[in-house]
Each structure stands twice: as structure tokens, then as C-alpha cells.
Length: 112
Length: 112
Image 1 (cartoon, rainbow over the protein chains, first blue to last red):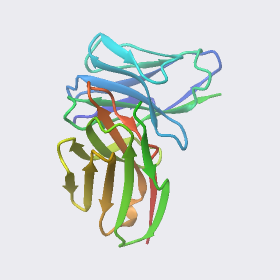
Image 2 (image 1 turned 45 degrees about the horizontal axis):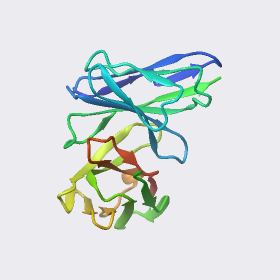
Image 3 (image 1 turned 90 degrees about the horizontal axis):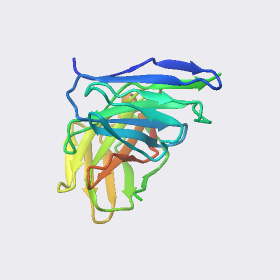
Image 4 (image 1 turned 180 degrees about the vertical axis):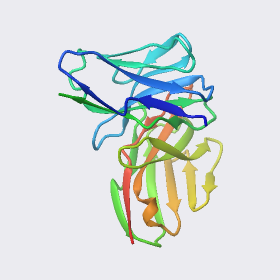
């Protein structure tokens, strides 16, 4: 079945650590996105990529980094520069602007 | 900058009732609007996609309307069921292939 897979489902980070969240899709979608969701908040855009080897910052990119070396994969690294990383992270993809967005099941990151 | 507002933030209704969720956006120059459902701790599931040239879309008991000129959309749920309990999010994409901008959602509880 086609879809988006995020891993891990739960992730714990110590202070000062970098961690990487995985997002893989087998939908042949060109565009991929990372959003952050906090309690009582809507989804806020971190980074997006519309094509391989290209990506753009979203509204809250500071403290995060991404890569898009393959069409299927768009990993997100949460660096030690992100001061408040505890949140629910969602990855999404779209085929083009006329089609619906598909989301993964999310990764819940907690700082310990 | 596009802003999306959803009212009410939470809604509780008895089973069988028809209900309307509201979404408004500040910039009417949108490309499309999507309604999503999110269950607790899960990713988003696309319910309906309305292109800017369309007035409404229907899927089963769900009907979404779009009035682009006034910056409003509604999601109508007929004959609500306990299984409809979830958070419903509205999102718009602008011209220039910009990513989706989300509202904070409406948390719906359908009481049996």
C-alpha cells in the first residue's frame, strides 16, 4: 500500500543532542513538508521541498535542518540550537498543487 | 500573511445531530482549501479538497462549501455519530505553490 511512513513514533532527546526524524513516502510525490504541532496550536511549517536537492525554510526553521537527496525521503534533524523541541512532528507530501496532501502518523519528540 | 481561523474551538453535540464547522481565511487569493480529520496522537487524514473555482464538495455525510470572496468555508456533517469525534482542521494553499496554512482546529465530541 502507498503511504508515508514516519519513524520513530516516539523519540527522546537529551539536552544538547541532535536527533533525526525519518520520513519516507512511496507515493511518487514531488513535494514533501515538515510541520510541528503543539497543544492548542495549529500546524506550523518548518521546511518544505518541492523537488529533489531543493528545499525552503518555513515559518519556524530555526534550530532545524533537512535534506532531500532522494524523492522518497525527507529527513528532519532537530539540532541542539532548537530550544524548545518537545512537540509532535508531522511529515506530509503532495503530488502537485491540485491534489490532496497525505500525512504520516507523526513522531512525538520529548526532551528529557 | 495568510491566517486561518476556525470557530468554535470545541463543540459537543448529541448523536444524530447535524452540525457545521467554520473556517475563515484572511487572504482570498487561495488556490485550494482542504479539510482534515485528526484523531488523538495520530496524523491527519484528508476529508475534502475544494479547488478555488469550486463552490462545494461532498463525500458521504460530509459537505464542504467555499466562498472565496468572503474568505469562508464550512464543513457540514450530517447525522453525526460517536465515531465522528475528532479534531477537524482547515487548511488553505495560496498562489505560487505555497504550502498549506492551517487553522488551529475544532475539537468535536459526539455523545451517544
